[in-house]
Amino acid sequence: METINAIGRRKSAVARVYVTEGSGKITINKKDIETYFPSAILRYVVKQPLLALGAEEKYDIKVNLDGGGFTGQSQALRMAIARALVIINAEDKKALKTKGFLTRDAREVERKKPGQPKARRRFQFSKR
Image (cartoon, rainbow, N blue to C red; front, side):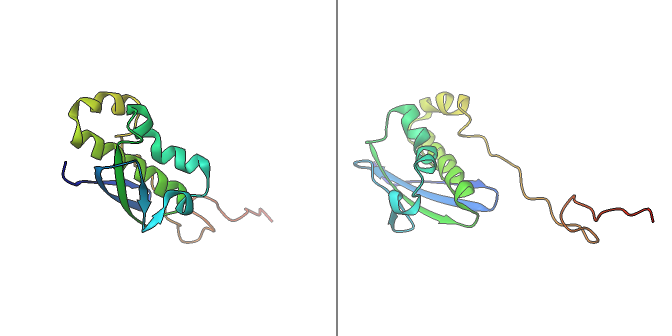
């Protein structure tokens, strides 16, 4: 099997994934997944597509992560891994799509408006 690459996005985070056959090692920005994501919850989010297909010990994954915070990065990475798994085996698409791993979450941060402290928050109104 040659190297399969895919991309995933969430908020302002972009994950570029390179998947090869291997022993289940995930390397993010030249760091191990345990060092990059110290939280067990975020590591679980990243591995969800692999766990859904029972392929957590089957592929080595090299990742370039850029932008966003740790939550957005983990969700972008989950989407990229799911897309790569669909490229490898098209029959897995239905299982991943029903769990929502292939759907792009389009929610973005709303911009701050002039004359207001935040996007929707207004300064306190004073009648007198």
